[in-house]
Image (cartoon, rainbow, N blue to C red):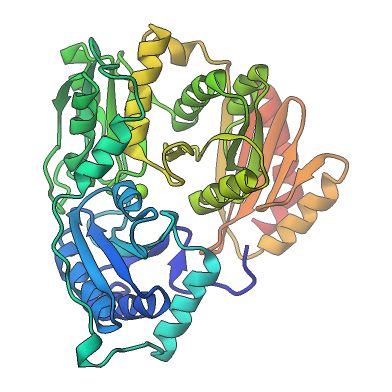
Length: 451
Ligand code: MG
């Protein structure tokens, strides 16, 4: 990770409360910075938030003032904009706060290749914003809005063509976009695959009246009920900008995201041998389940952008990279594009069930046991905690790509300071609960004086 610290940008762009951090003025300045750095034609889009129209117009003003032409894609999922930008436009911008509540909004900048902007470029944007350093054009050279047809169809077609024709025939699915951007895409994707579909919360509403944009167990209770009452094979729900997908099984149970990742990973790896890339915080279930196919895991820092860039770097070195993603339902399909894609993940679940000819509940229940213990400590003593852990566990296998991951044969743990807040997270996982608890106690006793 970069030495210079980002002030506005977090792991996934700039995000904050509208009217506080996020104002039209800030968004226009980010637009002028992006336009100065990536001159050319820029595609913009947004999720369904009430502040979206005001902020996207500020963004367009900033981009055009620096000479860029703008393609306005309107409301669409972040992965749809990434797909549209990929190798066709000079950059992209999405106005979204992803899974955050309706009061929030933010900006994600997309590079020419469809990936999210990296840390160094984000820092350059910040420096330009703070010092008002923009390449403003004179009257003859300001940009314009170029009218385009509905580009979202390109994305929908792009996903559908990755799958065998009518693979979804005989499969019933309930879709819950949560009033977010996926209302435009997932139902159509699954319908084109031949699925029979029902929807809930499938209309755009930035007040998010039905549930939070974060797809939680509680928020998805109505979806779960509908899956059971319609006899569907699964339910799928998205966060606000639909780069993530989570599932409800045929019995109406929430499928924990690491298990979702494991099931899809196992299927992908059964088809093609290679490397799977994921952050150090992801469950070891994946490693266990893909090993028999000769596949292995490459661990990165936490953040989908680090996963996507690592996948590309390994490919550039001539390695075979088959899959990537995070344990939160954000999965990356390298044959499709290098970003998390919720619509693609929904379609993959259809393929998985069609191929396995088993119910989702039986696939989940057949996974090996896993106990994951999680803690969050509010403390400013991250450096001291890491030093104490490093010393106490010096004889273990340590991975320090992000915090410290301790890998043992029967368990692993991660102690990781947050990049943005004074807090430290602890994860411990084992297939055996007593081993997980003992390991957890060992770590807690080592860091107890700092928490
Ligand atoms: Mg998101």
